[in-house]
Length: 359
Image (cartoon, rainbow, N blue to C red):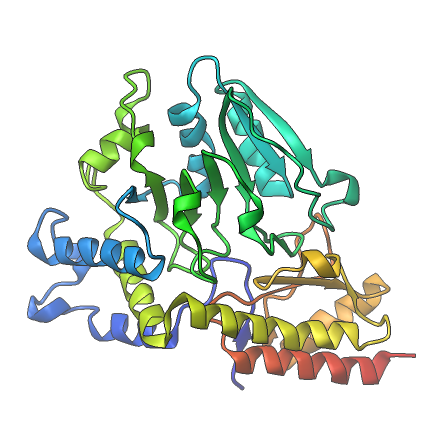
């Protein structure tokens, strides 16, 4: 039986990428070595490193005003690096809270400098995105948002709604899923393990005027230091960047982020249709206007029925649907590499399950 996976992350990689990595496993470009065995200062790895940067710039149309960095520590390290590097004396960092990850980013910033939560969706249990009514002020260090909320299944539909001179965005779970206007951001960061590749590397896109040297920041945590060293200040996660480069190549061959957006909309729609046309058998967690095209969350009316759903879905070769413990129910994560056929199969299973157990 063919297995179908909807993990929230780490998640599915494109089959073409996995095949190429398999073919190059013990002999990269005729060298007789895996790329992991090459020096990160050597020409073989240098070519991959720079090609990945170039591809990312091309795919997202990143202007010369911004730098691309490949760092370690996941998005969680960025929760600390951002305030350490960007909160200046007399300035306050502002946070918009839309879920667990934005809360964690905010709590980390509180340990480092002056910060304030200016908008929150907590009153709705993060089922709906809050009204964006914050106006920037002169003492703002930056405004931090999370573009997609994996646990609750919400996603900001219009990123142009945020007007701030130093807009910072955690795009770990939806980068490369739709076009962006990079010039509108001071900094974007994204852990790779959703849409960019395997865990181990984090992409940071930062406006160059924010690369200010700060001697109070340890070198390993300084954006300025990493930029000056082309993200090679210390040994990079070579294999993760190698796979990230292959994934970016796959996105290019597939039609770029415009095509990814179209595919992701179609994938999400077929599952949301199964929810909306179920007459309440399935209940979407997120409100319709806040729904994510990356993480689809829904529940059933009882714990017993939800356990049966998981049992029978796995018997049908469908895995990774159990929702986050803070929300319960189910979560179908349909990042770029998840094919339409998988989403069609899930929607079909949902309809059959309803026919079997619906009143």
